[in-house]
Image (cartoon, rainbow, N blue to C red; front, side):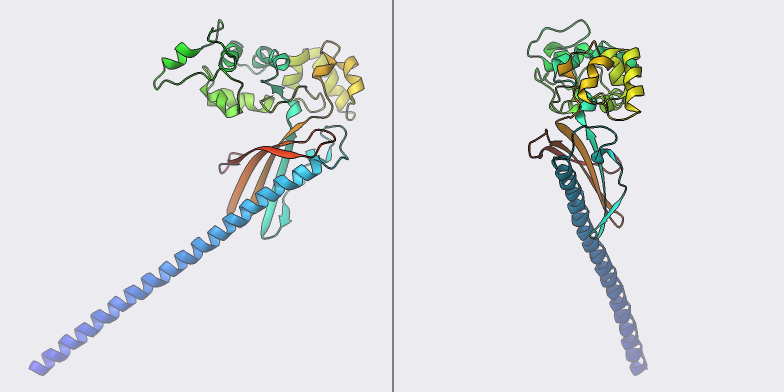
Length: 291
């Protein structure tokens, strides 16, 4: 009887030991699979980042090639090349000239901001708040806000009293919410452009700059081909020629690298004036789906 009990206990111990070993082996296999997946994801992330960076470098090289004379929708950088296979994945690159937009840091161009706001269906008084945020004084304009207003918020913060560093900074300005910023973003810039390119400017920017009739003339003319600078005086007689250009100096580059299911995107500002080597002057990662 004692022997049977001993054999039973030994058998039970063996079964328990086998069960524990099975659980441990399963857990180890799962851990190994997770580790392998994490390693593959980490490698794919590095490769996707490298692809996105290579896209910016390729765009900068194209912009500095010296073969581009007029920025238009017919220019090589403006064409959608689609996904380009490279290394372990693909890269997609989109380039836009910043001269298609009103530069909020250029007073002569920013003067057209109230008209642009009206065209976009935004309260034109918002121009006062943007100007107050950017100027050096603490005297509020009729529809603006200065130090006292911002310090009265919860939580309070100080007005910049300096030119906008990024478009995202507009979210701090009185009256600018996410919807307003999204509506404005395609039409304004803080890159440092001193002139507008009628070849690439949106209809909204052209209307704000010169009125509906002049905008219609430009849109009709550029459908026939790129517009050289010497044609601007005829098309836009009321706009000072120094505020118009057919070749910009700053470009927005969005580059997306994809490796398997991993996607990485960056936005860069490239300075590439005619005759000078291109240089990346601003860089930021773009959250998933925000490009």
